[in-house]
Image (cartoon, rainbow over all chains, first blue to last red; front, side, top):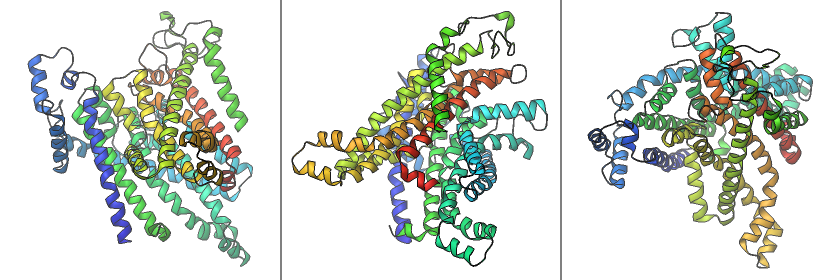
Length: 306
Length: 267
């Protein structure tokens, strides 16, 4: 296990370096002078020169890259052009809201997906199965930037049951979480079904049934528990989709998380903040994938010995 | 479900190609007196905030979605197949370099890198296609690399090598054709993904810019009228969901037909 852990950690380093390099190059992909683009056409030459110096854009590229990496090592992501505050502190301030939304979306997704997947697997090939799988395809196809406003129209505007935007109590969380979790639930339902179908074919399930164990018990106590391994893995791997979806969901519901901060900073051409948000989301995603891999290795020893 | 997929995609293509000529309204013609009017017998999907016919704009938007999907999938599939085959066939250092590039791009969740790229390049249709293609090839390359790794060990490939066939010929004539079924499935599902991504970027204001009708842009502008004109949100969103569902149905059906292994695994 220790060897697997070490190998997996070592393999993450070049990926993180690649992520940092790509995020660093973003600012240099801006057509023309990045400093001019950030300040707008009407900016004075003096201001442009000042910003160029402030961002280090007047230095050789290699030197800029090295300074960027050193900054990262010191947890310094630069300063927001709009507010003048450190990028990291702004992101850290917004992080709990995004994590809260992501966790709630995951809970919603699992609450829908697990029963749907079990029903489809147990009644494989029947109308129940076809309906559940068609529903899951509909869920995957429904964009959250449509589902979100639709939910808002029905539950906030027409019925007035839930608040339409902002962050507050549990009520504020319901619509964004459902909107974000719906597509994920569709993916998880398909995986739950596939994994459970495989397990139900295993001999230990057949043996349990032969011993007189009831169908429900054979499914829930034996097959379902083992089928959870790929489902748990997929939950981890889908974390990235949730983070990306959060960018859209937070924008729709004015949820004060990193996603909304990213879109706002793009609007203000606050590129250091854009870079910081992208970097933090990507690093969180890589970290989540790493944790998922490690948990998978703990759950399934065959992975460690490959 | 496959038939439903064919029907939906077929109707969407037909609507996109001939639809704008069949509808008596131009997608940019304005009737300001009737702005935000709901669906009627004359204007089936109602009118938008500038008095433009929403049905005509949805049909024009289908063109954008299908063209973006087609270009992104074509570019991604060609680049991904090329790099994936090279990595899988040659292995060694070339494979290492391409695989690490894939790893780094996969470290960015889904649409995030596209958002970042469009944010710096500027919002436009061309930049959306560029950004989605830059992240799109990775999935194809990973798929093809795996398939080529397997195919290069086939006896007929070894035989072709033994009689001195040139590498490009082996790849093009003997190896890449074996990847076509999986590539077709990936491309069909990729159409759904590209259409959703374009709409998402346009919804965020980073994609197609007004007055060009795009479903994502229409949804973005519809947000301001959730209370007084919900039809501006309902119809463009429905169009996206139905078309994406069509491609998903088709992709699923093709996977079952072309990859019997996956069928037995999932049933």
